[in-house]
Length: 130
Image 1 (cartoon, one colour):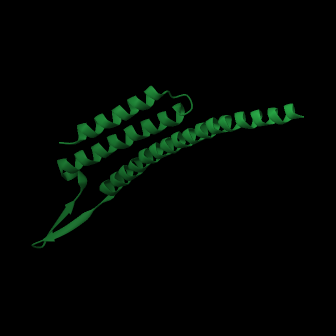
Image 2: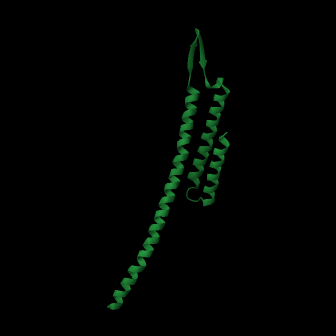
């Protein structure tokens, strides 16, 4: 009877350590999932906003009356607005590409993949700043 009591004590001592490691593993998995979800949201949001910016710039039509002369303004009259639309198009294309790659590589991606993706994002930000 004493042996059964001792064995249950030993079993109860060994199981909390295994539950601690499994709960730590679950917490780490939850943190990684949250990180990847935030990464996906931070890629989808600029894609949608840049696409909306392109739509607004292309469909905008404004008329100004100066000294009884009517002037129309379109984005393609100004080289800076043309560049703005083209730059937003590049942002949409690159964001869509990385979103697609993220969804395709989500289950089999190694940490080096996420590092290079992060490095690519940093280089893009550095290239866009004057």
